[in-house]
Image (cartoon, rainbow, N blue to C red; front, side, top):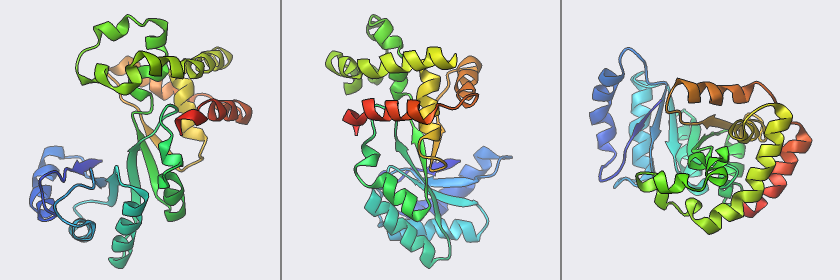
Length: 233
């Protein structure tokens, strides 16, 4: 997958930049090409028209979007259907501590349109691993902009503490880690609607993420996590 960044660009940039993107990714094809944000100088219709041209030219295989609202998803799907294609995905932030897509229409609209939700930041920047609750001093060692995110503030870590406690209990039950339990919920709770893309700093972390597929939470345990995180919808 790859993305076209719309910032300070018009839709014409899509066609002008695709060949360079293909060369950079060679020999791997662009299976999924996404409009990264709905912030282009051009309309959604113009952007979708340019993306459709890439499909016709067999330069990409599928079209997706990222950070689109429910209304914007509907518009993109309408424009693609007019061209004879379908929108396949919307990549948005989604995890147990940020379930807003369940209340703002994105999740339900995706279900109605047959669009897959690609969940980025599924571990809430590492918070759902429980490490910052177990060792708050890690916050002082953090570098970069992440340390200033609202979720890392003391009051918000206190708010998420009950979630971490439950994740740790379930981790012991399933012989897994809290992070793996959090990923497992996201992967399974909505069936095939949600696809998860956790980040990994190395092979060890990638292996740990993959191990989230080695078990399946019971419906009762998934409901327990759903209930305790309703405050984050």
